[in-house]
Length: 139
Image 1: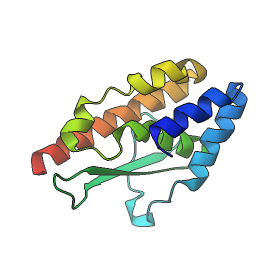
Image 2 (image 1 turned 60 degrees about the vertical axis):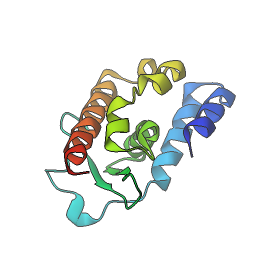
Image 3 (image 1 turned 90 degrees about the vertical axis):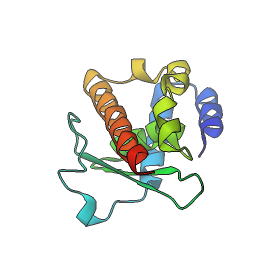
Image 4 (image 1 turned 90 degrees about the horizontal axis):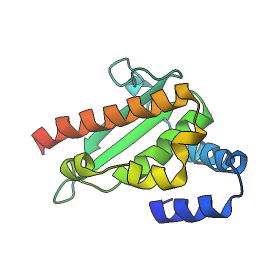
C-alpha cells in the first residue's frame, strides 16, 4: 500500500474502529524480521510493546533507505508499517527532510492514539531519523 492508497482507504472508512482493523491488517502483512535481528540494538526504545527497526541501503543510484520493522502485536506492527510509508523509496537525506505530520496530521492519527502509543510513535520516528543519519554518512 502506498500513501495515496492509504489516504483513500482512510477516507472511505467511517470510524477509527474500522481504521484500526485496516492498521492491524497492514501489520499482518508486514514480513517478520529474522530472529537474529530481534536484538536490543535494533529495539525501539521507549516503546511499551517490544518493537524493532532496521534499515539498509539498496543498490539503486542514488541508494534508497529500506526500513524493515517487527513488533509483538498486529496493532504495533500495523502502526509501524503505516508510519514508515512516508519514508519509502527515499534516500537518507530525503528521509531526514520528510515531515511525517504532512501525512499523519490530516489523518488525525495522533488524536486517535493513546498516550503510550503516541510515545511509541515518537520513539519510532526518532529511530527512523537516527538510522537515516547513520546511513547518510555511509551513502
